[in-house]
Length: 225
Image (cartoon, rainbow, N blue to C red; front, side, top):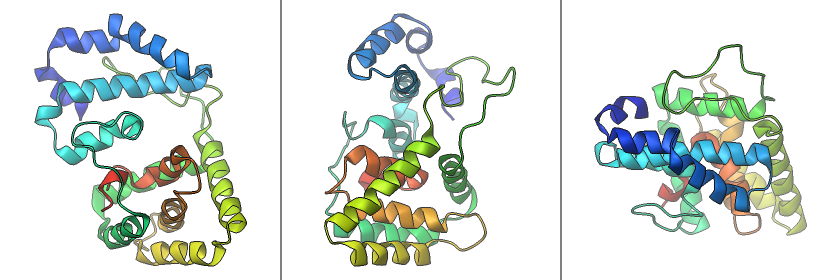
């Protein structure tokens, strides 16, 4: 989507954020707060995508821009940012929206969910996008599936520790019932997302966002109100 829109953007700015001096500036800033090389490489790629999205924001649908800006929305609030609603409102909004998932949007949810449930595979020889920001596999050492599984285990353990197990399971079940049961395999992931939102006050926000990630493009986290 961004590739098509960038043809009308300032080419010098595009170049600055893909191969120019801005890349070095962003990389230096990221390395100061993200010591792990693999995580820093992933953050740099996300920052490049976000920067290009900002360049063409005026020609994007607001929901599309929110999805592009997602990796930085909580730590660096973007335009029109609204703090998340109370937990009960977020859960209710998620349950209302889940039954409406269909078509390409639902397919994207399923694709992201599949990526987060399977270990990364090495990229095929010669793989990558031509020009612009390359679409890369996860850097070596960064395992989204392992991080996702670990975050979910932390949520379950925390729910048990604070005595919320019964209500936590009820939220899971409600989301699983609301999700489309059409074979795309997102039912369980809907329960995980709801469980993470329900426990958001007891676990780090980055864990909540990771567990919510399959649904982030369909209805961004901050839009749950």
